[in-house]
Every structure is written in structure tokens, then in C-alpha cells.
Amino acid sequence: MKKVGFIGLGLMGQPMAINLLKAGYELTVYDRNEDKTAALVREGAAGAAGPQEVAEASEVIITMLPNSPHVLEVVFGEGGLYPVLRPGQYFVDMSSISPIAAQEIAEKLAKKGVAALDAPVSGGVEKAAAGTLAVMVGGTEEAFAAVKEVLSAMAGSLVLVGPAGAGQMCKLVNQMIVGVNIAILAEAFALGKKAGVNPENIFQAIRGGLAGSQCMEDKAPRMFSGNFAPGFRINLHAKDLGNVLETSRELHVAVPLTAQVMEMMQVLINDGQGGSDHGGLALFYEKLNSLSLKQEG
Image (tube, rainbow, N blue to C red; front, side, top):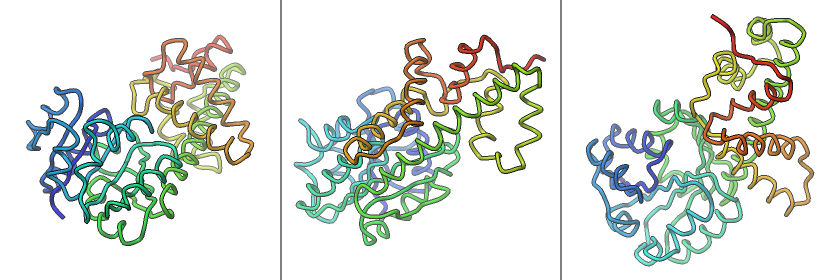
């Protein structure tokens, strides 16, 4: 399959779509922001006037949108994909949405002979640009095999987790772990700083031990430089945690640590930091403890 459609050319979607072009796919793109569509056309993609035009030109249709309502609107809303979808097509939603919404989409599209997969990603803008995202997929083995080569153009790792909705559930688990990890990094470094120990020295001392993690490697340097230019924005992470809390209530699972991190993010969003990188959770602890983790010099 060489004809791919891509809907949603935001911070993550744009570099992902560019990697599909680099891999040689015939790409048709759409974003409601015409400038974003035009930017991909300059890279070699075909621009579409709306979702239906993308579907008509494509064998595989990929969406990368903010949340469940946006995906449902693109698929089932006015001018959406559903009326023009045809048997044998593949729909791959790479957004981070509710597992329940992903299951609903898969069930409805199956009635039209369209295989749907939920394939959220982890890795942020840097890995989106490098084509090394971690992609966690929910759907059938047959559909996964059919689109695996396409997804590989954007992925460093690609795992079929389970049936429809399983990819989104995996992403929620990922976001819980990442959010709590960033928070405890900031909390611990704040304690070290208050005690008069250089947090960057603490980082160097512990990074090779059990406390070390990819999260620490990526986010600690941001805390020490004060650079919270978005790789993955706080408001998007808060959106994901909202989906976690909604799902946890439906399943009657207690998630107190995740709920606490969500409250921290609400404080930061209220302070105007929603567009900052989620490593900016450090700003919550800096404010709480009247200190700065930024290193001088």
C-alpha cells in the first residue's frame, strides 16, 4: 500500500507526515489550518480540502488529533470520513484518546469493511522528527500486519498490544508512569537543592543506578537549564490524565498518584504554563518551595 492519508498536522503530526513522505508514500494531507496543509504540500504531499477528500485518495488513513471528540468528529461528523469509506481501507488513529472511543470507532468501521487500529505514540516532538516514536497498537493481527510497514516509517518501536482499545489503554498507562516520574524527579531535586546539594551533581551520581530512567535523561537537563520549550505540552498531558481518571472511575480502580499529578498540572495551566513541556512540572515545585532548579553559568 502506497497511498496514505494524514489528518492533523500539529506539533506531532507534521513531522510524522514528513517521515511518510521521506519513506516514499503518496501522501494526501488535511488540517483545518490551511497554512499547515500548505506547508506539507511544499514538502511534496497532495493537499485535501477536507477529510472526505483524504479518504477518497487513500488506502490507509491516519489521524493525529487532540482528543476523542476531535477524532469522532473527523470520522462521523458533518463532512467526516464515514460516508465515503470503502471496504478494504485501513483507519489508523495515532491520537491519544479514550479506549472506549477507540472501541466505538473500530466497531462502527468494521460494519463498512474498514479495519481500524488505535496506535497512540510516545516520544514527543524530537522522536516524531527522528521517526523513532514508540507506537502501541490496538486491533487485529491481520490489520496490524497490513499497515506495519507504513507505521514503521514513523516508529522506532512498534508493538501490537491487543484488540481495539488496547493501544489507547497502553498509552494511558504510559502517561501515568511518565507524569508521576517527572513529578518525583522535580520533588527529589527540589529537596536536594534546599539541602544545599547541586541537583545536577545528584543527577550525575544516580543516573546509572536503579533510579535512572529515560524520563530522567530527557527531563532533568530541561529542569537544570530552565528550557521548557514544548516537546510534549503540559495541557496535552493533562488531557491524557483526564482520560486516565475517566477510565479509572469506570473500572473502579484507585489511581491516587496520577490524580495528584493532575492537580499539579492544573496549577501550572492556571499559571499560564499549559503550553510548556511537561518537564515543567518542576515549576510547580519551584513555586511551592521558593527555589529554582536552574543551574547558573
